[in-house]
Image 1 (cartoon, one colour):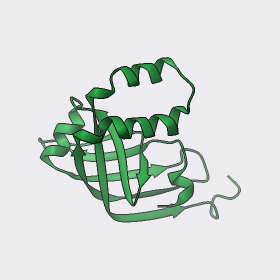
Image 2 (cartoon, rainbow, N blue to C red):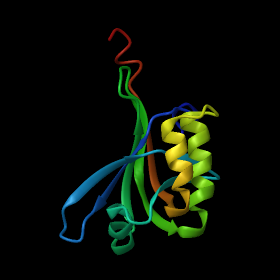
Image 3 (cartoon, rainbow, N blue to C red):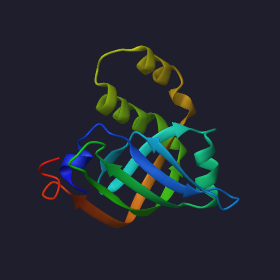
Image 4 (spheres, helix red, strand yellow):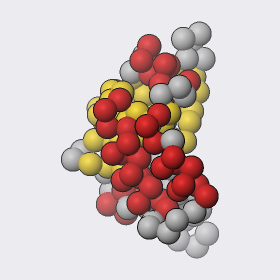
Length: 136
């Protein structure tokens, strides 16, 4: 994935399929580590059970303002209960920094309920529309 996308503080959008066949999307904090994408969420989040039923996913990490650029692809998700707290700490440092806040306290206080989502990308497509959008 492009380094500029990997380093930004935007969320990843993860597409998945619910048991009834309905597609859905969720945005989560992420970090890229050794070619894999990691997120954290609570054990009881519905996405966890949906991904346990069907570990295939789509994802996009993209800017919201012109010029648009990003990374999108497909992959398989593995849920790792033992790394939830560790990944949450990495994500908090990336997205919140070291400043203490109401959100950081809440996340720390409830970190034992976190699981890690490990996305192993299968196909990746990078796009950058900077040239065609240079005057936007």
